[in-house]
Amino acid sequence: MSTLNSPNVSALLERLSNETDASMPALEAVAQSEASRLLTSRTEYQTLYGLLKDIPIPVSRETGLLLYMLARSTRARHILEFGTSFGVSTIYLAAALRDNGGGRIITTEFEPSKVIRARNHLAEARLFDLVEIREGDALQTLSRDLPDTLDLVLLDGAKGLYADILGLIEDRLRPGSLLLADDAHHCPEYVQHIRADQRKYLSIPLTGDLELSMRL
Figure 1 (tube, rainbow, N blue to C red):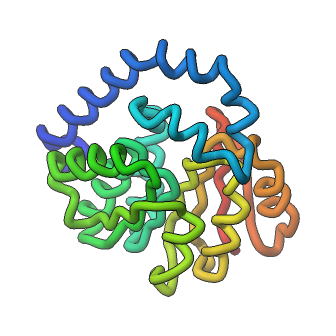
Figure 2 (cartoon, one colour):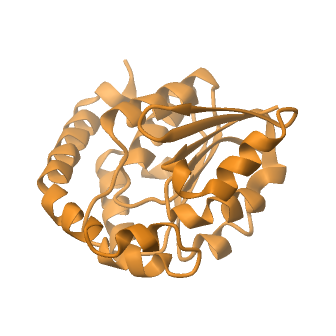
């Protein structure tokens, strides 16, 4: 049986999905402010995510299932996530690691209140033993103490930093490693880099503004 179907995980994901649906008016209110400018900024992203600190902004159920399937099918053991939020995507990835027989996710989040919620959710899902949450700015937290190789990377934090985060981890991507970038179009620099050399990456856009790439 998949860990996703275990009673504690499935019930938690359903509850978090309902909470996300209920928070949509608040998210839309922020989006109607100056969020569009802040979303792509490399210097003011903390302002935006400060406005969102009490609002869940998880991946969709479909994207969560895709993450689980990609991690399972590649038998991923070392996963990196940029942007923990309330830990929904982390749960999908950790469930895949559990079903793969173990491993570790390094995930990073600079908003302390979201770190607390993510830890509580992962503990409730009984998956926290597979996860290391690094609190702080990812440009610092992901600049050290990473595995020699990464099997799967999820970019779902401040969009303007995608290219910078890739620069920190690129030399740890082994042939066959997968990268999934949510709303990648908000960081043209990242998309241009990932598509520029087809001898280095294969990359395709997916529905839902996702960019899926494989290191060659």
